[in-house]
Image (cartoon, rainbow, N blue to C red; front, side):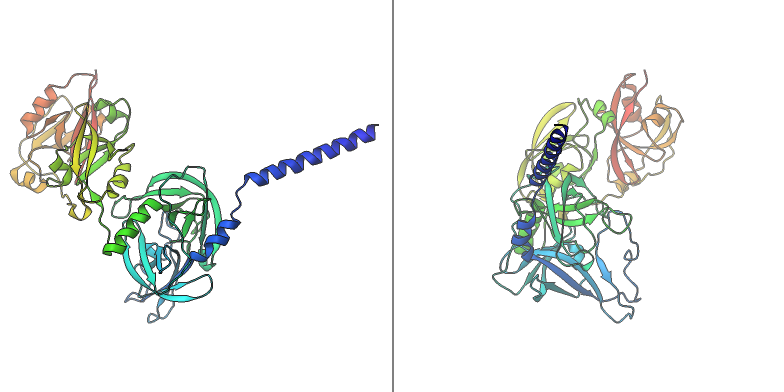
Length: 467
């Protein structure tokens, strides 16, 4: 009897384990059909580029690994007269030969060769490039090609399964899978531009995957693999892809015009932290705070001001300042949109006619010299700016900070020597006299926003007055 019970127990445990394994297997996605249906539209891109006059590799090629680097595999030929070879990935987006890849894959190329999965090869024409989004559109002379579809929207969710196909380290048509780790990641370029809300995944992406597609389980392309975060030169589970909405917008403009124009407001923005939120009378931190603006830019023409906090643009919430360029960049120049903002602690809605990015202006702001110094209850000395300094800054008034007492209100609030103060709360600062009057109106225990120029950039800080 005991033996029969033991045998029954073994059979039960075995059946349970088999059932558990079967359930686990059925809960995992099967990528085989996606690979069968869509891998033929993924291509390998081989470029040739003339070596630099010195015969050395371009700066940065030897600096592997590099955090958040643009990954691009080079095979340098020792003789300076030979061409350098580079490789990346791409995918066909129309049956008449249009191919999407990364800009950094083909940037500076003398020739671009596209190799299909059936080993056919075609010379490719670079139709147009967009360095800001790191996308490039190619075309080959062929017809009736397999093609991939860019997803119509960005309804991708964190935790969703995704699949990549590309040629990492030259290993053609490698397939890797993972999940979406995050969305809307802000990765500013070397020019501090930020127009792509990157998709973060843990898919194994390596040099050579650049420009390849990122699929969802429906076989739609939801992103274009573009960057990795690495300390080793290979994947550590932090990869970034350009969303399909950005890619679709860029492709359409490159097809029509050969270049890309983005929406532009002409503002300098900063994040709103908890302290600033309190000083502006907000219930919680959020939005994009306008720190500065072009005097003849779209924002200024529409009546926006420094100190306004944009909380919604064209119907889309702006949780952080990094979200605003993503939304503005997708708006066609010339379009009029609603901007919801907070001004003087009150909500407002203003219609803004969005301009084009090429209209952007740069600022050169620095501190000037004068002989007029004053002290005040904040624990700092300031001086009025000379007419020459005001003209140089492009501002109508302000005071320069010449000293800050350690442990004072100014020091505790983060004010530094050579900062140029232009606004306290809602009072514009024209001179030392208006500065003193503004400071005199402040109540003990209050927190108010203070606008200043620091090293050429405008920003707000919260001025906290002790009880």
